Length: 477
View 1: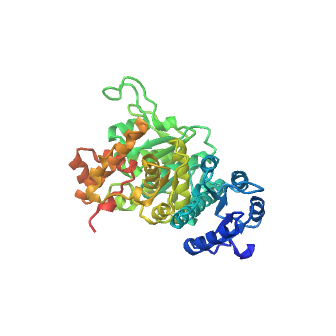
View 2: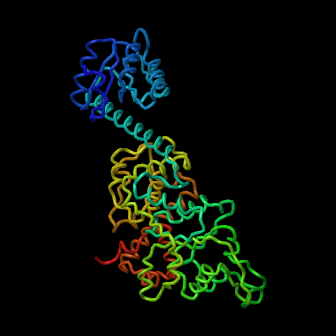
View 3: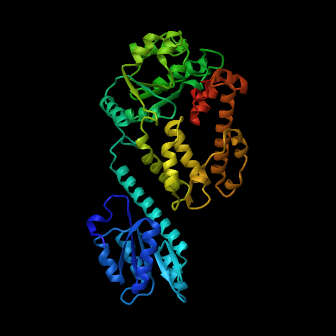
């Protein structure tokens, strides 16, 4: 037998403990498991001896007989679970002790084997037990790392790129500096704005968020700056604008690249003079507002073609924070997967759900053009649609693009889900497939795509952001 120092030392070899009071049984099982399962094996002739071994070693699987003289398998199971709940305990049972094996499963045993053994079945059970323990221990490690993260609410990760931007946000948060947050769709720009606000001395007041592309030009102006009664047809009373609502707080101008040039001029005055002029009024009003703006577009390119004012850009760009894409922070994907999985397992009462190692590997290796938002939506879909308590790679493999829309109509797996959750999932699946098909036909041209589907360009962009669909992924190469 190897020494404790050479077992479980990180060399990739797993450890199985066999507990049985029959020497011949121990020898036979050792030969089978060492040969077929590529792992180390230790043995114990009794339950008490097994407990002593657990003080030296940390096996992934314990294979124990149920009937032993000093400490039976059921009591050993309870003590192992108390010692280390990640160990997969497999109970061996002979004729006449099936009821005890069933009780062991109820008490938390991973599986049981009935004598006489089928060697291939033993190998399958041990391999599955090794895999289960590996998953549980990885989850424990991720949970510990998540608990140790002292970061603004909502941010998960330890990559250098993410740490740099969070450090920048923390350094400027408690100032009045205007911040321009840039990055691809789905990278957490609004989350960064909320972190800025929550770390500032303005956090006691609610941050106001303005979704700039969602509002037509005339509506956006009146929403931002307010108006007086009679300023235009339908203005039956004074309206307080969002800048006044955000007085002594923070206002986030989300996707600022889409605001019309006419409003850009008025916004420039707010940044320069710290005052607004509601529609229909001759007087200006002072405001104390910290302005944060976000965009996923190339503002410098829009300046060159005259769609964005250069002086406004420089006023907004006092501090620039670039949110990294998921491609740039791939090392954070396991943490993000664990975080979203735990979140949706609680939300949808799927606490026993586990992902197989090949699923985690697939999620870490695939491309995520929609960034963290797309990853989050995928984990939610996995939790909603999982049939059993274990998700394998075959369960999440998407059909090819030509068959995606047909796959959307397969609702059988949703009929047992909560109505609102099932409806939201169906709408999500349809919307993503529709957008993919639409943008493929128009080679990523959002203007033409909007005209082709009967939506305003801004409305289409809003839907694309919601589902993490990026137009550049569909442009002709």
